[in-house]
Amino acid sequence: MSRLTDSLLAASAPAVWGSTYIVTSQLLPPGYPLTDAVLRALPAGLLLMLLTRSLPPRAWLGRLAVLGALNFSIFWAALFIAAYRLPGGVAATLGAVQPLIVLLLARLALGTRLTARGIAAALAGILGVALLVIGPEAQLDPLGLAAALTGAVSMACGVVLTRRWRPEAGALTLTAWQLTAGGVLLLPFALWLEPALPALSPANLAGFLWLGVIGAAVSYFFWFRGIDRLGPAAVTGFGFLSPLTAVLLGWLILGEALSPLQLTGAGIVLGCVWLGSRAPRRCA
Image 1 (tube, helix red, strand yellow):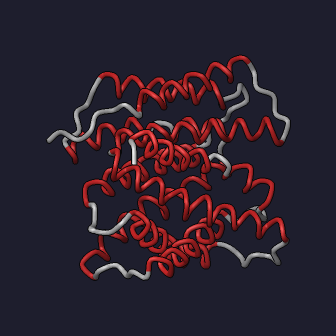
Image 2 (cartoon, rainbow, N blue to C red):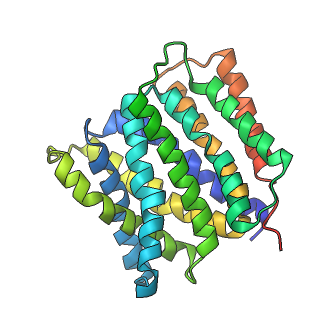
């Protein structure tokens, strides 16, 4: 399969993740961030494990717990906390520092060459996301800020460690193992800190199915596959597509207007995705 196809499949993952905000606000019952994260991760992970019929080796359980926590448990918990306590624009912009963190971590852990082009793409991407989603009414809640930055650091570490450890398993199997681990780690906190879900409506069920099947099982398979084939520095630049998708869906479905400043930000984001996808591979 060509590098272009690998890139398109990997880029589809954060594009799908951009639908999370509108699906959560329009289709899911309010006030259940940890429960939502568990129901997004655990059923999808168990379904993929049934399909792959592969259990992780005992020697890998510790590493899978770390990867599941970084890529799903900590990241998704922090994401929902930030979404509840910050305007979406502030949370998305803080999350956009992830590609820059990945570039630095990949240099330290993988020996990936750190280039001026890669750093420029990451910094410009943050600017583009800021133009897209930050409004003049944005307020900065300390806990929300800490959660957004924690989520960005957590997933950046998960991206780099996924490439560094690289278990001898296919991308689908690795996705199944990590989703299951992330959901299992989150489950006791959701049960302890949140009340039981109310009776679910058809709209609620549709939202959970979208987030679990498409937004977790399928998209993360493409994401981990892209990390393995393209390298973390190239794949992480696609993350800027997530806030872009969120803004476009708000315009198409909720009738939210796009200002000239937002259109400028969208152009910058797309340019940074293209530039970031051309990042060098790991040095030999």
